[in-house]
Structures are given as C-alpha cells and as structure tokens.
Length: 410
Image (cartoon, rainbow, N blue to C red; front, side, top):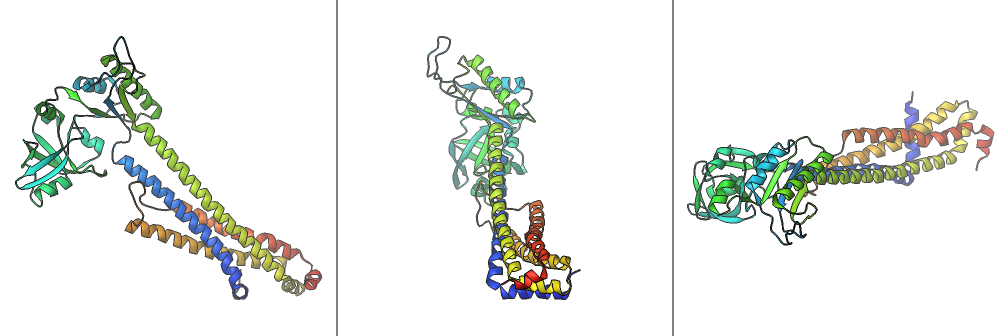
C-alpha cells in the first residue's frame, strides 16, 4: 500500500526537521521508558514484600504472654501471664483451622557453640517439629526435630548452613556432637532457610530446653498457621485464642498488654494492598507521561501539516485523492511514534534486566524488577494507535483544504 516514494518522503521530512523530530520522538521514548521502569519498580517492591513474607508462613498467627495492665476479677495489675505446654495443646486442638503449630522457649538466646577447636556464637531456638514448615526451611542433609525427640527430651539439634560451615568446615556434621552452653547435642540435620538471618541458628526440642534450663512447662511464644482461612476468619480465630487464654489465665480479654496476638494474615493483606496501590500509582504516572509525549506528537504533526499546506494543495490539484494525503501523514506519525516508543521500551526493559541480573538496586523489600509481558504488548499497541490518532486529525483537515486555498497559504 505504501511505496518507496512514501518512505522517501517521510525521511526527507524528518531530515528537514531534525531537532523538532528528535524532541518529539524523545518525549514519546521517555514516556514509554518511564512507564516501563516505574512498572518494573512497582513489581520489584511487590516481589520484595512477597519474598519477605514468603520466607515464613504468611497465613500464620503469633501469640505470647505479657503483663496485665487492667485489674480483673479482684486481681491486680502487673501480673505476668506465662504460657504453658497445656495452653499450646488446647489451642492446637480447639481451633480446627490450625494445621501447623510450634511452641518456643527462650528462643532469643544466643550461646557459644563448640566443636573440637572451633567456637562460634549463634542463636539457639527450642521449637516443635512443625517449625520447619513455618519457617519454610529446606533440609540439605539429615532431618529436622521430630516428635520422638520432643517426647524423649532428646539432646539433638538441626543447624543452619552457616553454623555448619563455621563449626565443621568441609567435615560432615551429621551424627557429630557439639557443645551448647555446656551440654552436648548431636547434629541430626543441616537446613537452608531463605529468610534473612534465619540460617544463623540451631533448633533443639522445646522439651529438652525446658528440662535443661529449668523452664518447667513454660513457653514464650506460639506460632500457628490457619490453613485456607481468609482474613476475616483469621481475625475470628485470633479473637477465639485471646478468649481461651483470658479464661485460662484469668485476665481481661480487652487487656492487650496481658496477651499479644499478631495476625500475619491481616498484616500480609494490608501490605499487599498497599503494594498494589503503589503499583497502580506508578503505572498511572507512567501513562500520563506517555500521554504527554503523544500529545506532543499530535501538536508537531499539526505544525508539519500547516507548513506543508502548499505542497498538499499542489498534490490535490494534480489529482491526488484525499486518502493518499491522509495515509501519508498517518504513516509519518505512526513511524515516529512507534519507532520512538520501541526505543524507549527496549531501553526500559534493558535497564530492568540489568538490574535484575546484577542486583544493582536490590534489598530485602525490593527484588526482581521485571515488566509484565502483557504491559509491554499493551504499551506497544497503544503507541501505534496513538500515533495513528495523532496524525489522523491534522491529516483529515489537510485533506479537506481546497487546492486554491492551499496554494494561497503563506
């Protein structure tokens, strides 16, 4: 439909107006570049948050005891609420949605670990077997703590990869004993946890720690997953747990200081909604930047048509049909817009890919900057359509000019 002469005319027009064409093309390229980069940044934020939450079970609830701040049933304030193994069993068996559960005792303590001449300080966390699922820790070798260990008060441990490397170097750790604060524990497994800092620890049975550290039947924290329960149901579960513990330990259910319940389901939903809002916001900014470039193309095409009014008049006088005039101007507009947009798209995707590959800008909450393939296709289609529209209005006006009027134009 378009001959070599059409393309030659386009390139001649561009060469006569290099600066104007460059500025127009740059505005479109910059618009699509900003759209792609902002969209990728929005995805990076979302991926970072998903990864941060995904390192642990996001559909989970933490609970821990506290100090009462309200008098209740004749009891004074400042009573310490200590959770017990019985509380753990009650909650686990009472709430049907709970599918994984762990109890922890003095889980924030670091101790010096010793193997032969190697010494290193790492966190020692007494837990239940489901803790591996809750932490999403993958076993590299051996196994995790199991219920046989818990019931028999076994002195065994599973250690993170950095702990193994610090104490054992290239030596196999499975079946070997390490000294943990004066007590020997046999290594039964080595794990790798994707969470930040979650590898720098060892896990031992909670029952063993309670006996070894004179903890009786006390636990500090419980951690449960709520299966497929939605946010609304998870909030109901949190309320049920608070009511159960308030009844058992005789404190006011409204006393937030007496008993802490942290619903990860709600926090995850709130943060992800915020990330979605940020992504939409940055995409809108990019779209408006793109629109500004397209408007620039439309304005420049109007100027070009005005400057070529006499030329158009001569072509019409020689018998050129209106369609040939309209199609020529639209082709020129689409060529400038499409080429500039493609360049902006390529640069934007290149920047995101370089950052994703070499992690130039990355943190715990900003990972894997990527563009949606659908957005790239959509942007390209919009560019072509907008380019055609940008040239359509001035081309129709040009096609309607009478040859006599056009030839008289200054």
